[in-house]
Image (cartoon, rainbow, N blue to C red):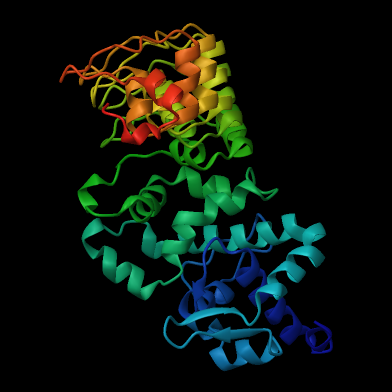
Length: 378
């Protein structure tokens, strides 16, 4: 670092920015992604207009990027990933920059949101998706990760972020990139800024939306029919769930498959969210249309012991059966979740409950004989 600090101001700043990205990015970056990140010009004040596009003249040369970092970084020839030469450098940088972590996350958040706000992303339709990513290499990273950086920043409720969230076309374009996987037609449309804030768990942004803007708490997207509460619960963002519940969000709102927020939270093992929703009176026995499972059933199937215990303590029905005639105990046994099986058995779950093919889970046999549960007939 001494060699970097001895450089002139511009070279030193460029080196620090490169190292910020390499150290704190949510995934390894290609040289193209990092070049675009370094070329973004962020407004210096709230009164300054956003740039309409990236100024390509600002793109640094790769050789310059390597040179100013004084041997700390290299480019993988096969993957074109720019990375630190040695993993111990990452640990060192995280340690010496711990006190300025919030400022670094502010910097990265500003870069991502400014990039997402370029004019080219206002009205572009889905059919030029690949071309858009090819010509704007930072866009996918920015769309998928800006909220994670913002959650660790102090600018969630700043004008840059809030202005981005208020422009539906920009939100929709970024969402297309976030959710595009195997099939572009499964990308949820009409996600609002509130949906996006809930998805990323940006509690300060949500406070701002609820206080000063007309956020519709019950607005649903147009593919999965999910509310902001549903997205927050799925991703375990307790503070946002609490904010929405306090403002009267419908705890029993269901998506296109009749899944409630409680179902999503239980399925993904978010104990604090499950507890909050249960305390607020969420229906523990609500079933979805996927396989007629309750929150307890989903938690047991996925081995979330703490959630199963919490729901059992709150009086959830241990014997309720889903569309396959499986109980929570049956699902836990099938998937080898020993702790869940033991817990449910201790609570008196029916060991002989039969599913559609008349077979039982037989957890006592597994416990007594000390056999792996997955070897039993379930």
